[in-house]
Image (cartoon, rainbow, N blue to C red; front, side):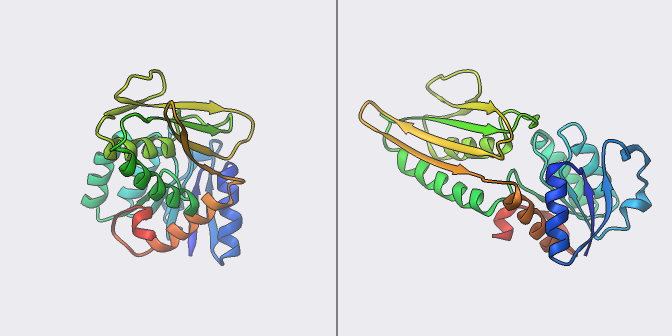
Length: 235
């Protein structure tokens, strides 16, 4: 399979290594330096694109791939406010899009645990819930897309929670503490606490390989498909 990498930072390099290990070919690497020179024909060398750029460029990259009918796997977060428009555009163009706030298999299992725990805790109003997410200093979006997904699962299952925030701790709000330090790949903690005891679940990534592997597997899954897909479809 021929792959175009839209974004060639640390994640892009991890994806490249795993893709080559799995027998694929990287035919295009789009960076800040060459992005303005990339033509549609350059992109169409590829069977699929994998997008790990920045929140500032992701929308333009997705739309361009969709209009070219080039299947695209999107790992960049910070664009989900535009999801409905992107989904409509993808379906209208009979293109293919695979999106995830996190491509790690472990994180997606963690999502399942989080949702189930929130469903159980709905009955126990004496427990409060807060979250913490820790990422490297280069991550631009705050909170992370993974943290937002976790918070939305809690809001969906716990009747007394209606929204999330990184700035206030009102009773109807899931507070997310966002930390940026060093080169941390990603840590997410969900904590329920009461005057009696605490219950805490955590996912801690040791490196970026899990995210990169998931993105490459998603690209393999997406080839020759039409429509909008997520990790739920892959798992």
